[in-house]
Image 1: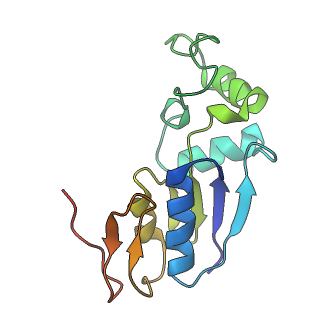
Image 2: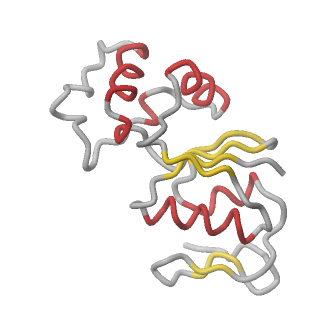
Length: 141
């Protein structure tokens, strides 16, 4: 299965998603979106395929979001996409692309729906068990 993850190695959620992809027996194409951001046209297509709005993929925490005034409801998608192109840290992560679809995987276990079955137990970095020893998603809540 061909899988692409727009990844931030500094982000625990992104690292957990990468771990879940590998736990399904898939070695993904890992794109550090801060070093190699998607073009605005590609991002527009990915957002649409994920059923999201451009605002849904904007990250506020730890970014120049507030300083750039990106909460202004009058800003068009093109302006928001331009801001992401100029400041890739504004892109919420991780964004995962598979033949089964495109998804913003927050929380990380959302990626399971896009993958082949998990091959065994998986724990998030914080110790939370999300997949049991038989590769089944563990109920959380």
